Image 1 (tube, rainbow, N blue to C red):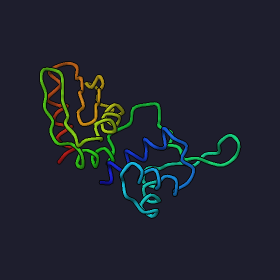
Image 2: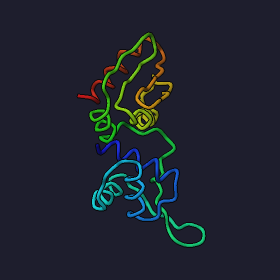
Image 3: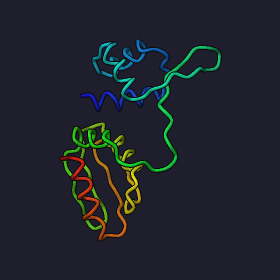
Length: 151
């Protein structure tokens, strides 16, 4: 699944020194994700990975710089929701979003970068996101926004 592969690529690039597409392909295969070099090349382009010089010479992949201010929901967020969200439920001012395994943290990060006024923040595990909404009467509008992402 593409979104799971993208999440793993972002995790690898963030936590390891990945210098080449071949290295990235090898690491993905070690993680149990079978890919071709052509697929990795497309993924790098879609994720906007950049190569930056490192101390001692050479280059390594980095995630693209993220703006400090909140950003609007993008088509990427809608795609991630369509591909990964299984269920949305709530109690009082808490919204629980169930996802496919391994996708909750990436989706929570996207939610944290929305401009939705009533969302205080999220906490994510492997396949579950807890979203805190304030005030309680705003939960319905937040649920509507979330459901519109999964349509």
